[in-house]
Amino acid sequence: SHPRGEEPGTGWYGFFVAVPVFEIALILFIPILRNRARGELQRMSLAIVGFIYIGWMFGHLGFLANASNAYGFICYIIFATALSDVAAFTFGKIFGRHPLRSEISPNKTWEGALGALAVAMILPWILRFSFPFFGVWQLILTGLIVGIGGQLGDLSISVIKRDIGTKDMAATIPGHGGILDRIDSLIYAAPLFMHMAGYYYPLR
Image 1: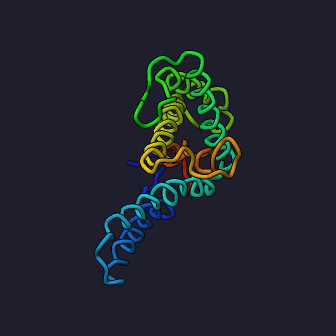
Image 2: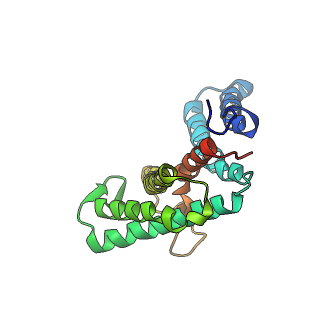
Image 3: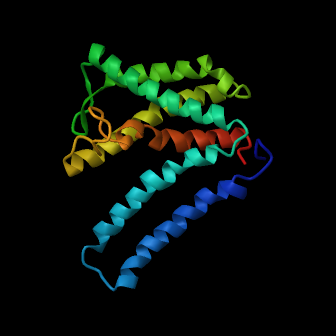
């Protein structure tokens, strides 16, 4: 039986199953409507990736807003991913010797990644008031989600930037790139955290 007494496919939770299906179906239907084939595979691929990365995965933050503990959840995941990013940069600068993925992000190191993971594993215990109903295993999972998921999100956006030959997605924030460059860690961390929290705690 489900820990919180309801199936995850019901209510708003099912929204995250239905939306990608209809969105991707619409993207695939547009070339038929336009009666075009040449270049459509690339266009559809870009549209699907853009929707999944920006719309669907970031949209999980909005779903967290339905939780009775929404303020604690959202503040925690944003603060924790930002602090883990700072830890990755700091540990990498001080101790970095071994590149993490040199072809994707030359400045990222294993030492920085491990430092970020260590900070992410400690944070749930310090900020436990954000989710007092979490037990030991939930706190451990929360740390892993932020520590690993945050870095995967960062690297996944780096893949796109490297492929299109740009350092930043925009120039909105001088010296830091665009908004997406600042919150890319949430691409993995937000959905993973939402589904983990939703498994143990009613979010709707």
